[in-house]
Image (cartoon, rainbow, N blue to C red; front, side):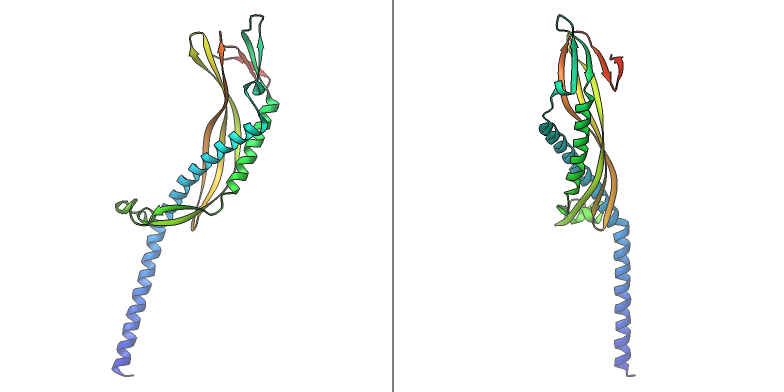
Length: 215
């Protein structure tokens, strides 16, 4: 083997070692900086999109079912018109809860490869470069389901007045995918669905067949 051939082989070995070390460094950088950062971005973006989906689902469900306060809470009055008792209409409430849950699941499933642009410095996960550099397109996909819980609240609305608010507490368990990372997270939000102002004393309130006097 000539001297020239030996030198070429040595240069080739050094080049291969350099490429190997570069790849190893890139993998370490990816695992320790990039992947956790992308997972964190997935969680933040997923929660933002999920909140949008929840509000859209509630608005569409109320519009589709054409439900108002009087459809969700039935009032009993005395001869003077004062409210004595409020009873929740569980038939309409359950219809609303079911429809909201279905719509949330459908809307989450429709989020397939939605593009978001994130600065390169942010993707790298290095504080020094945060929010700097050209935008890198990432594509987000989501799936999940939601549980809904009905909530009734009374609040002082001024002199001899009480505000009665009806709301849904919605908890969505979602999976957010931004290749090559994925994140499972939960989003809980409270959405008001109806309210009214009651003059006089706070009435009795009946929910799920049990009666109690609110404070």
